[in-house]
Image (cartoon, rainbow, N blue to C red; front, side):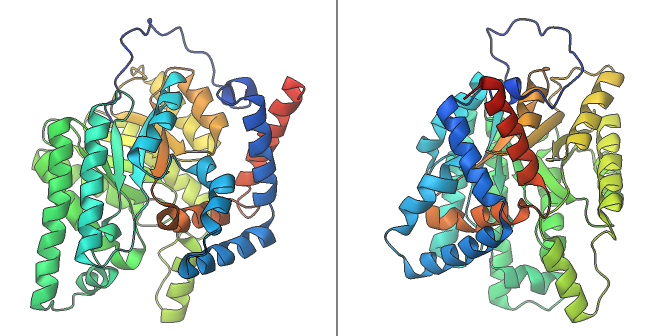
Length: 404
C-alpha cells in the first residue's frame, strides 16, 4: 500500500512497546453513546443461536424483499460493519478513521454476479472507488472479488481442466479484460487492488489471473495483491514460489495474508467428495504457517509489498516486533496491517498509535448486496472463535474505565 502521510504530521515520537489492552486508545474514536450501543450489539452477536436465527431470517427477508427489513439491518449491524450504501456515504467513515491515523481499504460488497449488466455495474463501481481512493490521502487500496466479475461455474470448469465452449472462452477473455481495466487504472492512479481469495475449488484460475496482472502492473510499484489463505496447508509454499517467480520475472509480489474464511465449507466438501481436505489439521498449524508467512514477507520487504490482514493479536505483534527488530521504517509502504471495520479496534488503534501503516477494511453497498458479508461477520465471530467475547470484554472494560 502507499499510505500518504499528513503534511502537518510531526516527526513520530520514539515507539513504545505496543499494549493491545489499552482500551483508552482502542476506543478513543467512540463517544460514550456509541460505545454503549456497540456493547449492546456485541452482546446480542455473542449468542450463537441468535446469530443462526438472524442469518436465516435475513436471507429469507432479502428473497421476499420485505420492506421493514432494511431499516432493521441499518439500525443494528450495518453501520457497525459497513461504511455506507455508496461511496459518498463512506466519506464520513474515511475521514473519521484518518483522524485517528488509520487508513481505509474500500470494498464494494458485491459477489456472485452472473448477468452482463450486473457485472459491468461492479466494474464501473470498482473504477469509481479507485478514483475516490486517488483523491483521498487515506485510501491507498480497494478490494475486489473475482466472483463479482464472472460466473463461478466458469472458474470451476477451468480449474477442472474442462474444455471450454466458445461462450466460456469469450467469458474468460472478458474476465481478463475487466480485471485488467481495473488493475491498469489502479496503476495509473497510484492506488492498490487487493484480489480476494475464494474457495479452493475455484482458486487456481484466480491465482493465474492475478499473477498475470502482477506481471503487467507491478513493475515499478505494487498495484496488485493476491490473497494467501494460510489455513490451507499449501499456501506458505505457494507464497515462496510466487515470490521467486516474481524475482525471475522482474516484477514485485503483492501479498495479503489472511487465515481464511471457508474452513467448514472446505472440510465438508472434501469429505463428501472424497478428496484430502486442503485445510490445516488444526489451529496450531494455521498459526504456525501464518506467522512464518509474516516472517517471510517482512524479511523480503524490498521485493514483496504485504498486508497482515489478521484479527490475531499475536500475529500483529509479531509483524510489528520484526519491523522494529530489523530497523525498518514503520511507515514503509510495503509493510501494512489491516482489520475489518467495526472489529478489533484494540489491535488497529493501538498499533496505529505507534506509527505503523494500519487500515480498516470498509465494505459498502446496498443492504441487500452486503447481507452475505454481514452474515459471515456474525457467523465467523460468535463464541466459536471467541472474537465477539474478546471484543466485548474490551468494550466493557472501557465502559468501566469511563464510568458510564
